[in-house]
Image 1 (cartoon, rainbow, N blue to C red):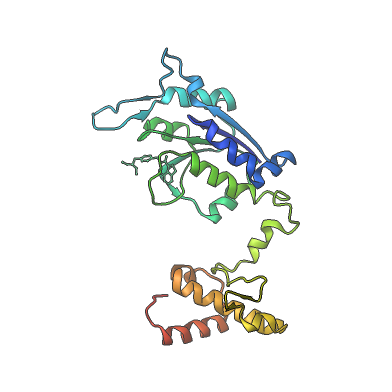
Image 2: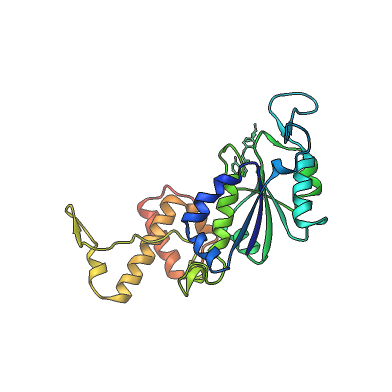
Amino acid sequence: MHFDVFTLLPEVFEPYLAASIMQRAVSNRLLEVRLHNIRDWATDRHHTTDDTPYGGGGGMVMKPDPVFSAVESVLGNPPGCPVILMTPQGEPFTQKIAMKLAEYDHLALICGRYEGFDERIREHLATHELSIGDYVLTGGELPALVVMDALTRLVPGALGDPDGATDDSHASGLLEYPHYTRPVEYRGWRVPDVLLSGNHAEIARWRRQQALMRTLERRPDLLKTAELTPLDIKFINSMQKEQPDHEV
Ligand code: 9D3
């Protein structure tokens, strides 16, 4: 997987890339991240990358020329790979989108500062627009790292673990069951007896029920698309008789 990142703050990527599992993927030649400072393509004396909005109003807008020049000089015209614009107006990023994007071996990511991009960047340069959720950040750099991190762990071998992210495919679309490790008692809080029983069928049933309860409590929206067996549905219905405050 190869990323070209266009940003006004390339230095913010370096410590995360150097410290995380992403570094190992870089060392193993499974991942390559090239950082490009959009300011290097600003041609005026002050290397201006933003300007005031036509029509007035507050805030500053990313100028088109430095962004087009940066992307086209690195990737050509047309760029030849998807060009993803990180923007609060983009499609909400999900694991499904991550899996789709992981099919490409080369992606460009554009990060903005200021209030937004000149519309011509979205219309004539970007092929995709992504948001990472409904909260306001100061720029697209953390969102770009989030997207690269999620895609990196989908690159075969990048997790080190031989099963790796393929294990995600065993996920049923439910929240996870509770995990415990040693000691069996910590500050008087005991690990549930069922997990110490050695009865693997019983453990599997308990974990499934915990996952279903937790999903019903915290993310009932997920139950609409989760893969549920008739037994799961029976269990959920019995839960709802006890605590009927959730819509499914
Ligand atoms: C006044 C309207 N604001 C939009 C909510 C303007 C604005 C605020 C912050 C425009 C850009 C930004 C900086 N954020 C991003 O560039 C960004 C982002 C985000 O803030 N949240 C979630 N995903 C993303 S992707 C890029």
